[in-house]
Image (cartoon, rainbow, N blue to C red; front, side, top):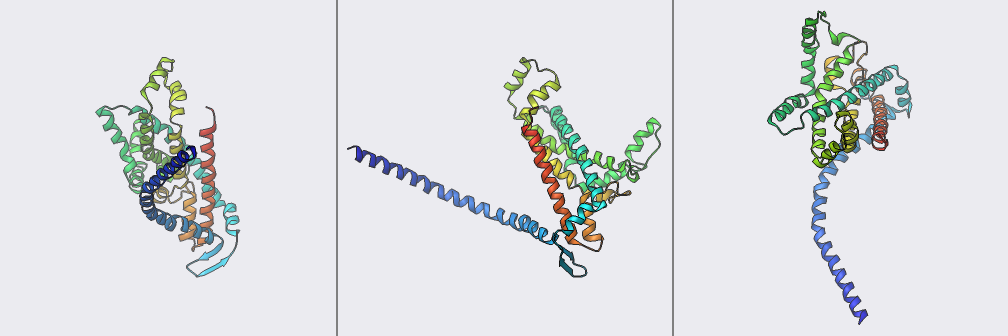
Length: 311
């Protein structure tokens, strides 16, 4: 009798499992159908170009004179010893440290300032967000005028008796001007990320923080906002870091790497090696992979610092 009951129970369990499997099969097939086009797109436009670029980086490849021959890792050795690339790397690391830090805190400040449901707050948030939706080239053209001799910056400084200055032609002030422009245009974008994170914090947590005596903004940020929005901060910093390290369009439009390479960055180096200096594509590909490794190391490092450190 017990064996019959156990067999019936086993058969019923098998039937239930088979029915669930039949129900899942159409869903699995539908999921695969939707994923296949995306996988093809990623393979064709991401993985294949990356592998092909790495292969090219091992060759001296000059398409203008049809000159191609294997050089191994000589391109990489040349890149890491090239003073122009080292200068561009130092510039972009300084730029990244300043811009990512300032825009992260500014974005969080924007989010706190406009974290209300009032109509004024929504309108103000929309106005602040406008620079984030304007194309970088258009913003670059606007800021060429802003920092020119007759631009907006010199106009305001004239009220304090400061003579006009062409900021973008100065080896000292050109890069800070571009930093200011990018902070102004990117901080509103990351404000949306922090706004979503703030709205996800339960009101009970904020009430408990007030009861526990966390009334000052700094203490509330230290013990409430930062721990609960750590993953939002990771996203903001990673996106900001990768974007800053790949700075190109604003530099190309505004200064073209000058004056005296004061605003020279790695992507300008790669562009010049590809299209300006005869066309050594293998060397440019090697420089791009060196930049990729640096971005990867910085991303992993900052992620571990934010997630593992006990603040």
